[in-house]
Length: 451
Image (cartoon, rainbow, N blue to C red; front, side, top):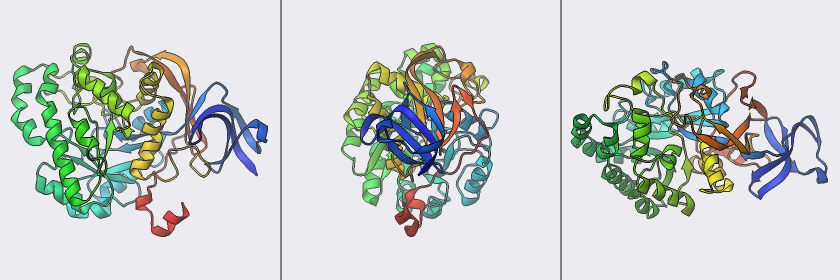
């Protein structure tokens, strides 16, 4: 057996535990795992990773790269450039672009736009809208589609499913797990005057309050159970939702963001102003600590960045005309590794939330673990490295991060996708060669058996 590449001496997080092993790669996949004592096969190239940790490639399941329609603040090239720079090997991009991704032709356009421009692997969500619900079951099975995204409350863009009738129609037609932004649109409309009259971003979590989230989550889980479907509830922010989600584990999986686990009100609004504005909002320290309880109890399944860039000029508009959203894909790994350093979660739990969890929840083919036969996707990190985050490091066209000035411990030193280094020592290498992510549910039965 001859290998293309041998990664020697790194400490890998594997299904068998955290082990110092050598990893052999051939034809873009993991071919062999062992140690020098067992005699590694010959390899065309050997890279010494002593002192570093090798993690399964991190997959960010929630990004907004704004192409088409908002490319003045981000596009597929700059967004995936930031992902690769930050140690992320795959992304799922959201459908609320302009025009929105609600049809086969729109999905094809995005796949074409990513071809030859994406620095990491990618898939795209199809948006649910009242005029495409009957087609969702077919659309979500198209190659390159990560599933259906449903907005119960309006955020950026005009995708919205705000009636129980349309929610039920959506869930009846889908076949895969649906990803949901759960805020109650009626309550948002009823309380919009709070934000308009206040003009103070600190009232963002007062307008979009806890009940706005809880009402939508309760209704979503009730209808999902009635329809016999499973849902993935995105960016959970409240302590109130956690017991509801825990009681419905058979129909719901749970996602949170690094922002909601790191920032809390009112401090973040005092420091960052409208740069801290996102939907659902950053809430009080009481809620942040409750979210960490869900991390530690096992209730949380996935961490996604909800990377949602806007220019600084746009963010500087007076609240509430300022848009909601922060950058996040490039900082996901160092921010969460700093939480590992602080003792808030273990390295194994980090891997479960950013690699194995996404693969399990979305049915990703050959990704999410360091095991023979899987894609050779690795996020290689130095757990001892400390560094200050700077806006100048951010590859996003928007050019800023809410973590500017924070010193974090634990940094990506290399990103490898299908056996090829795309980033080493903060430098992007070669040309963008990302490919569409494959999903078991989208494969014909004979191909599923082969995998």
